[in-house]
Image 1 (cartoon, rainbow, N blue to C red):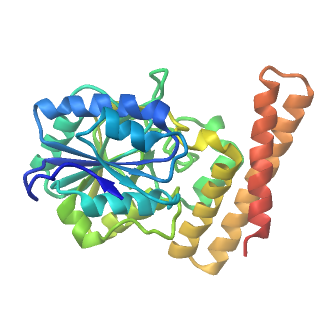
Image 2 (image 1 turned 180 degrees about the vertical axis):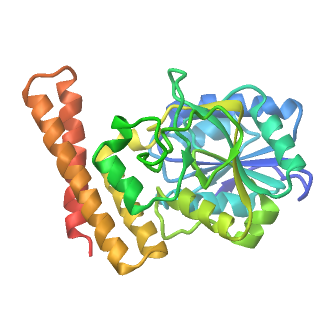
Image 3 (image 1 turned 90 degrees about the vertical axis):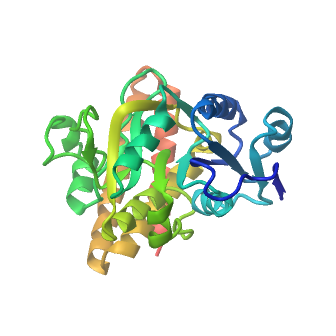
Length: 321
């Protein structure tokens, strides 16, 4: 079900912002308020796709934000499909996919819109992403390889934090302090060129959530479109807007998405090896968090929660064929 005023004619909107929401009402107000402040200088269309939230989000949106187009789903259709539903409704020449727990800063949309206008070979662009405490959130990605996953599992990226050779796919060696072309950016905030999207296609709905952004960036890159990280402006991503409701379930979804990505882009041998690496990662962390919690380390309950999440992931990886 769609609740909205008559949309402006196609081509009249500069940016259509699509937000997929599931029980994240506590974050959504700040996201919408900081985003809608950009309407002073650019034409912004806002579309919220609600994945059958149980926290009264839809009625609240209709009451407090009548200018927002609200699309109600009767079930939780996931992130990829939810975004595709919103994209099909969008009128803008640029599409901004943003999580509900993102706060816009600076003149973020204006600056990124201007950059995309000046650089017509860029298909996807993203700003600097900050954590809630102001620290850098790693939003740039390299394509996952057996090596960078092994570096993560064995902690090499921590031992050699400034080394690109021993880094994980999150590019933790990169200071996120300069404009650069990257292989992928985080789906928490992506500004996408409609022309490129129409060539590449929508998000792959076989991904319920997680890894669909990585897959999309790879498909853009394979068609010759650039993916660019632009730190001239920033946004805050608080993280966990939806996933904090069921952390173990979302941790498992992330692992299943990783397997789905590898199955799509790699062969049988690589798929077997990545599963072994992932199992090694979870086994090591179950042991580490378990020992720390038994030793009475600070944050014992958090340690136990992390151990449970890794155990759930381990079991899911063993079961999946």
